[in-house]
Amino acid sequence: MLPEQPLTTLLESYVFDVSTKFINRASPHNQALLINLFNTIGKHSSDNNEDTALPINLIGGMPIDSPFSDLQQQWQEALSKPVVRKKGLDEATKEIIHKAIAANQRQIEITLQHMRTMGVLIAKVKDVAHTTPFQARLLSHYRTVQEHYISYLTQLKAFQKRKLDLLSQ
Image 1 (cartoon, rainbow, N blue to C red):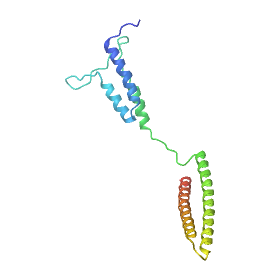
Image 2 (cartoon, helix red, strand yellow):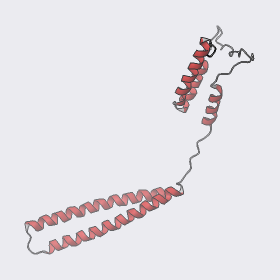
Image 3 (spheres, rainbow, N blue to C red):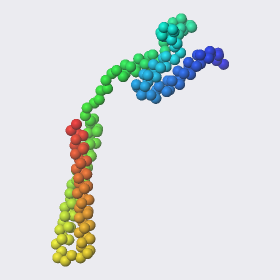
Image 4 (cartoon, rainbow, N blue to C red):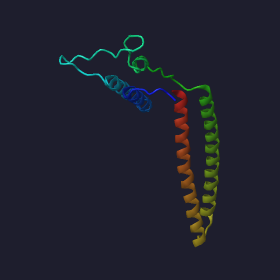
């Protein structure tokens, strides 16, 4: 059985464990604020508004630093360093974009071929001397399909432009 510890020691240990778990989930800015708050727990102001002395280690007689002082210093150092962002894309990403551009170009060519086919079909239906209701519906259908291909081609070209713009950055 463990020797019984004073309630203050158990309470400090509990607060330290809980605060460590909570602080790890906070944003870097909030972590610094929480660490500062934790460092003030248990400190009392005297009449002249000065903090009391650090607690004394009963075994060594040396002042005990807050368990978060090292962590706070590490975070302050990490946050003071500028974030370096790489400009441009890595080679694997460029390769994927090139493949997407090539596939998109094939889709553009296929769509253009379909549009030419629809143009030929529309011309054939128009060349018929007598127009029946069936031919009118067929002509309307072909024009609707042709409009769909025009819209699709516009989307493909916009996609192609976005991918090319990515590569040029």
